[in-house]
Image 1 (cartoon, rainbow, N blue to C red):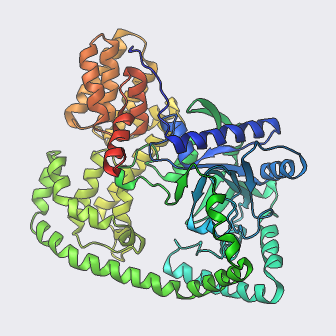
Image 2 (cartoon, helix red, strand yellow; image 1 turned 120 degrees about the vertical axis):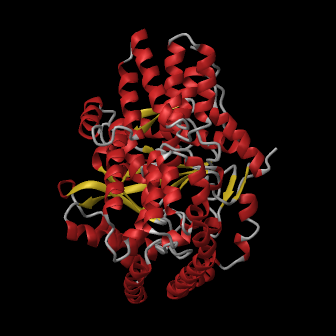
Length: 560
């Protein structure tokens, strides 16, 4: 084993957020309040035990009962919070029309446009997602989600909340929204919102198997078990609650590719004014100069007007996306015309580099957000689409298949045998991934290999699963020689696979081949974006691929 020194790589903003987390954790421990790290913080804890280099916030999950307990403490106990801190939530802050409470550092600034008017939650902060029980009965569940969407839409006057629905669903949502706006005008906003909120909180534990929270573009729905028997995970210098079977939470929240680090272009940060100046230095310059009640009414009126024209705006977005596909797909059609057999031959020869180059314009265009959002199919023959999808599977990217297959499935024409086979293989790969990453169940992995290996002996996910089993049981030189041999066999078929390279590097290290091991370790993390593998390599040899990523981000973003 190589010696390594662990140094904190947090930037100033992350250090401040971490301090807020430590304070919040101490408060919760003192008053027996349970919560979980969520979103990027949870990903960071499980994948790399730290912030991702681009992270600029911390989200937390908390159940309604635990929030009520914490709120009672905040409202009845004296001197609960350290100096320079506040807790902002809709019940204690005028114009804060947000279901997410925030633990705020008042000595710093983090102002988003949607919070500038409220002028209270404008420091660096932790954000709490409050979860309520959602009924298991299908009809009750449908009513619950409809109520939740209307409640959140009525609550916020600053922006449209449910903007990620389909055009058809938006029309239904808007008609219901208009109906409730009329009720608000007749009965008053507070009465209507309270009624909706009480309805959402009315379900009993016996009626429900899951918790739900809705905000922004999605519903967050998790099994109750994730909030019970809570486990802790290392995050930076501390141990924090991450829930039971956190990998299952992450798969639900982020999809089957949750363990993979996004490329620079897909790394999401939040735009806002951020620095170490107390935010009141900014807010005092404008708050006293406006009639806030008058402006607040204008916000509400503008929200209704925006909702009225939103459908047409979305239709324009869809037409623009269709026009983009129509124009740009001409080149793609010309490039791929008459190449079906040639491209399939590349697949049979496992020439993935050439295949990826041949299809790069297609995959880029089909992956554009609005093209996917409106289910617009980039013209491509079924045979070529199947070639793309088989290639993704063979490169260990089953989780990307549905992004391209879903638009074909939306067509009336039957899928055909090849697409059925593709879906079957993806299901197998997903089963193996869940068994390894989420459940860590060796018996289940063994049973899945036994079930599928005869039909798919060369499937990369089966190789990875077999190597994973051997690694878990390895104790002797013979064990590591066996792993080395199996990795060599797999890499003969898939010489690009960084996950398998990392396993072979570990085997060679245990066999005393340290120079070869280090070479393989470095090569492995250049050939995968699996964050768990990056951390495994750092733990085993001290080489940090995340440090390389951190420097790359600085270079691409123009940081000093």
